[in-house]
Length: 214
Ligand code: ADP
Ligand code: MG
Image (cartoon, rainbow, N blue to C red):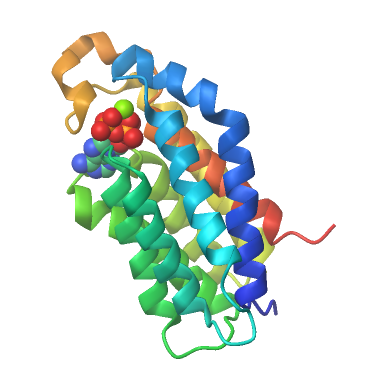
């Protein structure tokens, strides 16, 4: 059983911020094809702000809920693009699952992960197949939960989540967008991966790595 506390979550935000800085150009390029080329900038700014704010929290007094709520607020303030409210809602939902818990066990983490994904869906009202980040998040959360139901460790659950999220992101290439900026393109969006689904995979990869002990 893994025990996740404030310090582990702070580290996770730093890890994601570093990954977004590395992936910024690729994400902007993807958004340049079917959107307005700012997605990498939005994700880098958002997670840099979130990582900075949570790093400044005192780990001896800040509980996991405060980490997520602080990250949500900073992300929202830093990001003007549509990914801002989507991830802020996801982070708030994760914070709600953690409420009252000084640390989180495997089941808490899987539940939190599912609530995070559902937050994106509730906020953006996108369904699977509409060529958005939901096409990565929804299958990732489902695979993660299924793995947990089969008794898998947290690391195995997040590995299953990553795998399903990667397949979902890949599948967006064959989709016409029904939500967001790229929905104006119709069939011209075919053949291109949705940038939001691509950045979701970056996060999923960080989550998996962070909870996999070498
Ligand atoms: P903007 O489109 O405002 O420039 P970003 O470039 O940061 O915002 O993010 C674009 C991504 O947001 C898209 O690739 C898509 O994955 C995601 N997105 C847009 N609208 C929605 C929605 N309603 N639900 C879920 N995801 C969405
Ligand atoms: Mg954009």
